Length: 365
Ligand code: F6R
Ligand code: MG
Ligand code: MG
Image (cartoon, rainbow, N blue to C red):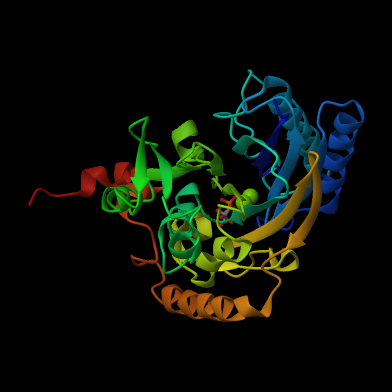
């Protein structure tokens, strides 16, 4: 049987530079040093360290499968080491996503975001790792739906016989702690009923009908883990491309539309998701707007050949321009909805405290 390779993308915000806008080079260097050692020792096959906004992103290949304790421990230790450097430099929010003092077997539920998949490498294996800042995991619902279920986005669904049967979507209810698999195109309307509510229902994985994994997303919500607002769950997503899966261009196409996501300023505002090249992944205006980068790799005998900066393309200029226009329009609302999130979402911020403080001053009506 052919060897299986695992692609693990694990991320955390362990300190921002300056404020929450970006990351200091030293943190990237610490992470590279750690993962280099792990590569030399044979624990991982290959790695790439990068960042989007204030999030440190560890992209690793190995042969240990998903949810592997050693790999999660390696990521945890790397974040802890980067946190030490962040503390030394007094960077902002040092260690903010590490919710526990000690590692306990699986990094999920401890703060960092995780997307992993295991597969047998194809004759050629193009993958895209999408990484976003100032938003939350529900942000992937719309683009994943378009990539794998919308024939107006993905021509292959119509004209490629190997995609014609459609795909299965594994959807998790992050509040109900349960999951469902829905099949497209047959159950498309059922799927949309759920995933349109992107705060609660999130597409976690997409499979081809023969069971082959095509996409995996992080679905960790920090506020649910900690029970209060403690930062954002800036998400990651892995998409395999070509030969019976969406073409690279079909996987990128949904981002030509900067859809509205939650997570701008203080995690409490809606804003457009702006696709940017790596060098523009520094959300500054009003701590945003939310943005996404796309790192393309060819996986070759487990090695990461790349990345290619896939949004570094003038054909996404219009999306960026539109995102700025939408940003202006939403910003004009100031503290009013729908720029500001609805009350339910603000539960994890200051609203409950304010309610409590003014409780006695409310008169019966
Ligand atoms: C963090 C974020 C920022 C912060 C804001 C306030 O990812 O989105 O908008 O929420 O800068 O940060 P604090 O409360 O740390 O001063
Ligand atoms: Mg931060
Ligand atoms: Mg962030």
